[in-house]
Structures are given as C-alpha cells and as structure tokens.
Amino acid sequence: MSVARSNRRGFTLRELTIAIAIGGSVMGVAVGLVHHAFDWSKTARHRRMDDQTFFNLSRQLRSDVHLARTATITSRETSNEAIDHALDLVIGNGNDVVYTVAENSVIRIETRNDVPIRRESYQFKHPRSISLDQAESANQIQLNIKSVTPFQESEVPLWRSLRISIGLRLRHQNGDIES
Image 1 (cartoon, one colour):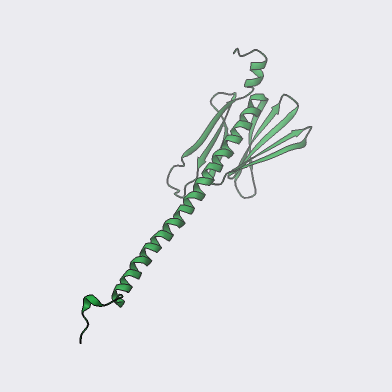
Image 2 (cartoon, rainbow, N blue to C red):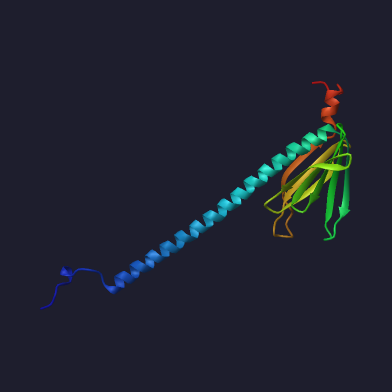
C-alpha cells in the first residue's frame, strides 16, 4: 500500500529549509533597517541640537555686540597648535564680555571689574569650524560656522553665517539712527 502524495500531512525538510532561509533573510533586512533608523534618528537629533545651539549663540552674540562700545578680535595660539580667536567686547553697563572660539565650541565669559560673573559654553555635536572676523565694514563682526567633512580635498561648506553691527542698539538709543 502506498500512500498518495495528496493525502499526506506536514511539510518536507526541503520546504521547511527554504521557508526558514526566506524568513531569516527578511529578519536580517528588518534588523538592519531598524539599526539604520536609530542612526538616522541620532543624526537628526544632533542636527536639531546644533541648530538650537547656533540660534542661542547668535541671539546672545547679537545682543552683546549691539550693546558694545568697542569690539576687538584677537588670536592666540594654544598648546595643541590650534589658533583660538577671541572677541573682546566692552559693554556700556561696565561689563566686559569675551567670546573665545575653540575647536567645535564657543565660550562666553562676562566679567565686571575683572571678576567673572557669568560663563556659558556653546558646544556643537557635529564637527564644525568656527571663525570670528572683522567684516568689510569696520563696525561689523562676522561669525562663520562651517561643516567639517572627512574629505580633506573638498571645500568646507558654510553651515551658518552671521554679521552683526557693533553698537547698533547704542546708536539707536542715542538717536543716531532714526526708526
């Protein structure tokens, strides 16, 4: 007596092996996509944090420079052969503010009579190249922040830029600038 093939129950070993192989492939792709989704989420979160850092820095810097009577940009060499730029501001209320540009961060220190009263650090998550320069006009400061890429031969793309006029709020309050 032979059993007819249509009456049997269950699967053959070959059918089970093919089903497991297909299921494993689908699971491998799904795990890879979930892993990439977490990486993309982390990158997006860091970009959002960098945007918030820049907007906080730009708001504070703009306010300080607009109130400044004088602004001086200095460069100093650090121990690790990097050049830090500093923006020294003399504010009208007797305070001095110094912005120091280091690698991937900007540090703001406010002093009164050479005693520090406030210190803030603006740290970027993604590698950034930050520079403070005197703009074409003698009474303007320019902050440029560029993205650092792993390709040394490519030009560094400008990420954000800000140009601020020194003493703008003081000139407006004194009536030198009409509204």
